[in-house]
Amino acid sequence: MNLAAPVTEADCGVVTEIAPGVRRVLAPNPGRMTGPGTNTYLVGYQRVVVIDPGPSVVSHVAALVAAVGGAQLEAIAVTHTHRDHSPAALALHNFTGAPRRGLLPRHLEHHDTSFVADLPTPDGTVLVTDAGSLRAIATPGHASNHLCWFHVETQLLFTGDHVLGTVSPVILPPDGDMTEYLDSLQRLRGLSARAIAPGHGPVLTDPEFALAALLRHRQTRERKIIGVLQSVPSEMDALVRSVYDDVDPALYGAARYTLLAHLLKLERDGRVKRCDDSWMLLP
Ligand SMILES: [Zn+2]
Image (cartoon, rainbow, N blue to C red; front, side, top):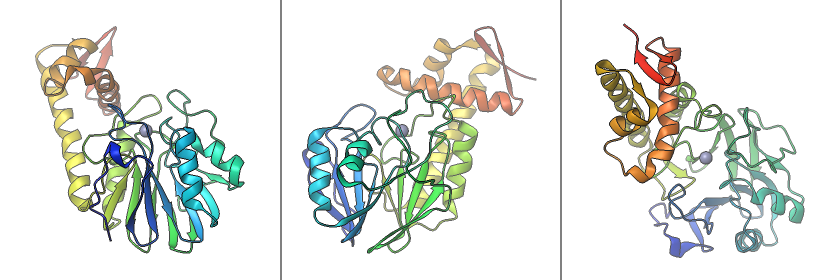
């Protein structure tokens, strides 16, 4: 296995085999939220499934078509339909006729509305390739329609934006939901995955460590919110500055979404309530 292969912007368009029958192609969409770009994965040799075709960029679609080559494209699977993960599914579907597999979101904001699921893809759906099968695992939270894909043969877990390499995924209410996100992290802990292949960044070779660290991170952030509200009810702007005083202010836009997701969870848990523009702690 070549799990430790780095992924940088220089790898854009390069096909890297990371495990037997599993290849990665980096899309040309680097950015603050996408790191070096979106990882598109191909599983299989002559019967292939593409996972997260990525943005609809001509050079990226051409790289994927070339990587599939003369093989049969069995399915175009998505982890979710945010605009950096699924738009190229349309061009790839039009070019190959392969069915698109994935779920539709509860709320369309931030989603790629061009995505169509040609076949239903509920939790537990199995896609077959000649390098082993992929099983869909419903993991709502980052987005309501998020699926992880588990490659049974290599025990690689394709996590989309549910688990990322170097950053904590943003949760975007109302489609994203913190309670669901934490439940979905717990669900993956029982899977005994060997490694995590995320939607952005390099492969993570210690899944249990990564999942535990994410859970800890969210718990720490929640405690910090409660700590701030213990002293004074706060509006969102003040809360973002206090709760995220350890991050670059350039990230406050994304942080604000995740903060709201935390507050909505705490409201549901009966810990906080909203009064006009302020949030306060309940006794
Ligand atoms: Zn996403």
